[in-house]
Image (cartoon, one colour):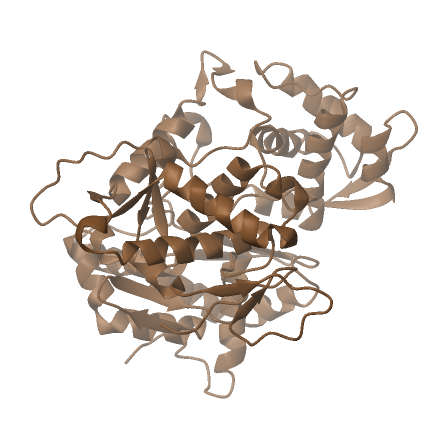
Amino acid sequence: MSRVAEGVSPFELADYQKAVRLVLRHPLVTSGYPDRAALATVRRWADQLRTDLMEVLGYRLVTTADTARLQRAQDGLDATRPALTRAGRPFDRRRYAYLVLTLAALGRHGAQVALGELADAVAADAVRIDGLGLDTARKPDRDAFVDAVTWLTERGALTLADGSATAWAGDPERAEALYDIDREILLAVHHPTRVLQHLTSVTSLLDSSGALGLFAGRAAQRRDQARRARRLMLENPVAYYTDADAELLGQLRAPALAEDLERLTGLTVERRAEGVALVDTSGRLSDLRFPGGGTVAQAALLLAARISAVVQRSGRHALELLPAPTAAERLAARARRIDGALPSRGTLSELTQLAKPDEESADETVVDADHEPGETRYPFVTDSWLRGRLKEIIGEYGAGFAADLRGDPDRLLDQALDLLGAMSLIVRVDGGALALPLLARYRGVTARVKTRTAPQPPAQTALFDDETAKDPTP
């Protein structure tokens, strides 16, 4: 029997699981973020949360009077949880750089700071980094800087006392903004478990067992393997058995894994021949919903259905089967990409493309067609085939898509494939993509463009304004 939530009565278990999902979904909780009730909810269960999160996942919860900070143990590099701009778009490198420099500059200020003064301080540091800089005379630079400041404001590290950041971004000569600085939240935002200056690779941030105070030894190793297996399920849409080593595979198949995670989170564990997943049908924990609303999600769903259909072909029409890059290979590719921008003789060598968001490093992975005996292989669809299917989708459903993406099919395809990759439905490889087993769940999707005069469609139909529904037929 699971010992998770031992001190929680059956009548209060749902409330406790709500607190678990809250702190897992928002690793930083403050008096105002993500809402005014969140901190009280976490603090009520703080002792039990600290015990269970460490025992089950190896995560440490640090609470103060005004914050709750979850320190995760990182087993991989995750490109699916970016910081978001005011417009809801992922941060690019410039914005991440401004965010870090803003945190450093705030440490040198008192209780308040004017936005223009803060921008000048960040600009003084940014100019020393080749390819970065911050020119407050340039609107794109001001917008990127305000996105970084807004990210901190949303979490309570900064509180607007007067003025408007948006107005300052529009015209810094005629507008200003004044912020109060919360030191406690600033410390919680940036709380590394490593001395960053000593790192030679981003992979040094991974496997945080030592940083979190876990001990070596056979019993501790078994405990850590169990935690890794639970983290793999919790932090990913699906844990495929083919991505697990022998020890981790045993943990993923163990009945205790499902029992612990279900009792901790209140969600359901689903097992299939290819892997195991923690199913969040209500969206209470997931940070990325699929199917979902919006042009990219809708196009991705329809593309998934087309890939799933072509995968079913057999005989001479069957797709070529190729091995997928292993989890270790994908990690190594991402690490090489990030490490290429680490400081070298005082400069950052790859900041010349700061205005562009990172691409999935898996795009650059080359798959070797020579496979080992018994190696799992997956159906391969080419880039040209994917472009052709997306062209068909735009022709049939484009009236419900955003105009900018409808007019730029290459960008729409790239974003749709990124979303499918983030949901573990495909793996992007050189020249195309590999279809993973979970993709079969979206076979047979039907959709129609919603019009003002059209009658209400059945529940299995996707409405292409803001809603997308998946055909539930397996």
